[in-house]
Length: 88
Image (cartoon, rainbow, N blue to C red; front, side, top):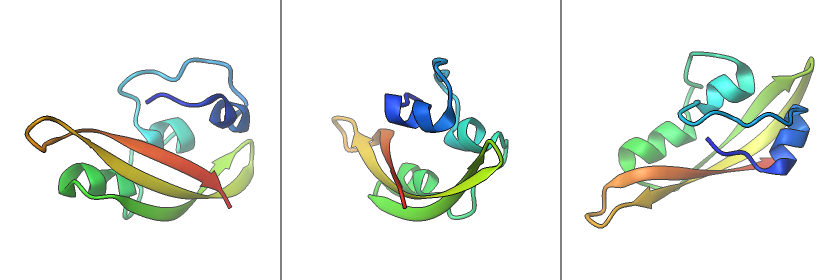
């Protein structure tokens, strides 16, 4: 994943977030996909999606609205997604 400077500031990190790192690993340090993961739905169904989730960082829980949008290839197949996080 790629993270904006705002998200890195929230996470209190200057480090580059690794390619092929999942959002549940990056934000919650979990190997388990979140229940009703909007990214998974977008990847498998090829549709826009959104969800509300809470992330814990530095012992503080913060709510986010996550919107996911598919990136499609020339044949309409999903080749990636964009995830937009909004603090609520």
